[in-house]
Image (cartoon, rainbow, N blue to C red; front, side, top):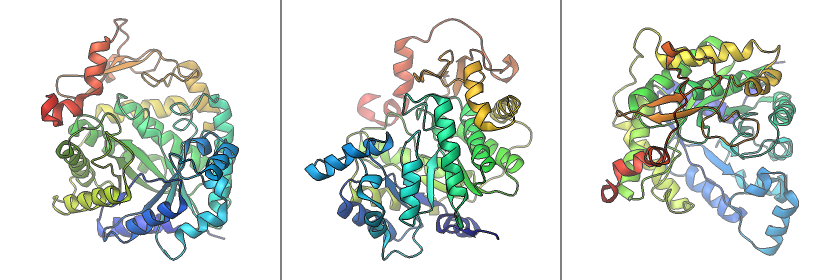
Length: 414
């Protein structure tokens, strides 16, 4: 029997047909009353938006007892404690919002408890992945995370609806990771999900520092998804820049607007939006809604998407090579992904996880494009942007690269 499409997937598919950009906040509050108010505010914002329930750090790391103690003591958390509060409390969040799609975002390397509670509460969409929610957020061994995500993905695949799972692979560390690696990781995680029976996926990419290079990356990701995910419902999601955000409200709004223009230009279906408060504190419900409306209004003013240039770009060729090399390592991606990091075939710049090789580095060139500075043992030839030099990236250059958008868009700092 064919499973029904999830509310989340159906919503995105409908707006894809209308050529309307779906916008989404990164919203999470520990107080169920505030979380419920936030979801209702997004649903009533008058824009094509999906809701988000972002979980807290205790839940992310499986410390549900500490989350429960915090709730009992009235101590605020940095997100929604889904497991500690229980499925009934979570079901109340979306009660009275029929047809409104909600995604659970969590950051867990071992999400079985989270997925079980989410499903029992009636929610059908989440995100992450065995690499993207292990290396940046935990010290759990990558092989342990891969086994946990195998069980978790299989749990979603076994439901009566086609639950949606988004790879976070295109957002590794949020910044300073060349697009070829980001695209490869996101596509590989989507293939991992499909390998475990998940029939609705999305590939992610985080806005970086060059609109032209980012467009190449999004087009490359769409092409690879079309080549590799035939028969699997899929779409592409872009994140507004995840690194050091401009401190000025004007700078923050401009960076959000740039991400909207990038999304519309490339035909991206969904955009995760940031707010003007991003550099200072956790945004309020009202600030999240304001950002969604800004993104939607900006999208309406853009020309239609344009076709990618003909031929193979460097980003596509890098990602294509990495996907093929990793898949050749083992019969399944559950085995191949950890093996790739053990051999240095995948290596995320500046990532400190014990299972990451830590040999690679990247920098921004004079045009703001991310370039490899050192590719370690990754199988990227010089003709595709690979570099095996041994000179170091100085701290001065690294700090300047990290603050690129802030220096560009905050006049007082420029």
